[in-house]
Image 1 (cartoon, helix red, strand yellow):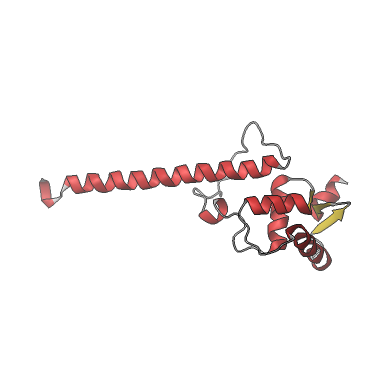
Image 2 (cartoon, helix red, strand yellow):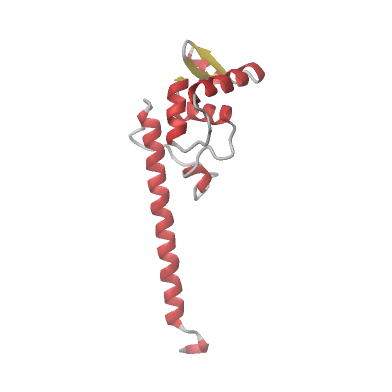
Length: 146
C-alpha cells in the first residue's frame, strides 16, 4: 500500500456510495412514475417525447418535488398546482382524489367541499382561479382558451 492508503477501505466506501446513489435514483424514478399516474389518471396526456430540459433546470429533484409534491403548501396553492399539472379544468372531486393520492395531509371528512371553499377564497382574493360550471381553471390559461 502506498502512502498508507488502505485501498480496500476506499473501495468499500465507493461501493457503499454507489449503492446509496442507485437507491436514490430508483426512488426518484418510482416517484416520477407515481406522479405520472396521478396526472394521467385524471385525463392529462403524456407527450411522446419529453420536453427538453432548460439549462437552469436542477440536476436532481428533491424529495419535496417527488415524494411529497404538495408539502408545505396551502390547500388553495396545492389545488392550483394540480390544475396546472393536468393542464385543464378540474372538479373539486377530481382535485381531492389527486391530492389524496399524492399524500396531501388533511383532516377533512368532506375534502371536496373544503377544496371548493379554498379555491373560492383564492378566486375572490387573488383572481388567479376561475370556476366555470363545476370545474376550476387557472385564470391565466382559461382567458387564453376562452
